[in-house]
Image (cartoon, rainbow, N blue to C red; front, side):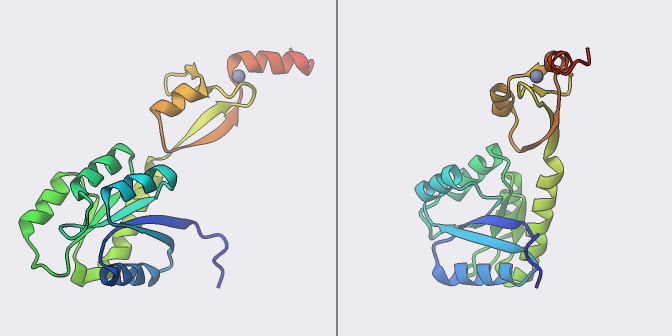
Length: 187
Ligand SMILES: [Zn+2]
């Protein structure tokens, strides 16, 4: 098996039941995705994981059981631009209103627990959207300033505060280009 070039997907799972967690993780492993799953069951644990080990995607049981306020968790995930997928409770009959409510609050997707085969496609869709949103930005090779869409150069710290989820392409800002040319006898 050639797994070396596959990107590992970091998934944070909000789930207090070991049984459900096992089922969910098993479903994730039945794919070509290479996943690393960390599990939390409280709001404190969730926030701690977000800060120390930012996941690519969050999976959460929809209602009940855990000490985690899942809608508060969803709000935080949205601020951080992390996709958030609900799975319905195995114990309960599905309530269509609950599904509507989840989407209204910004859930990326909703997977029924008795249709866990839908989970991997949902995860892949969410990751694809995130990848497409990620921008490549020009960064000066000299002073590390970053150019925005209006052609203005900014200090990296300021730019990073405003834009998360970015990748860099190396270039030169106006001042450093002049300096670079001078130093190399090109100006
Ligand atoms: Zn520069």
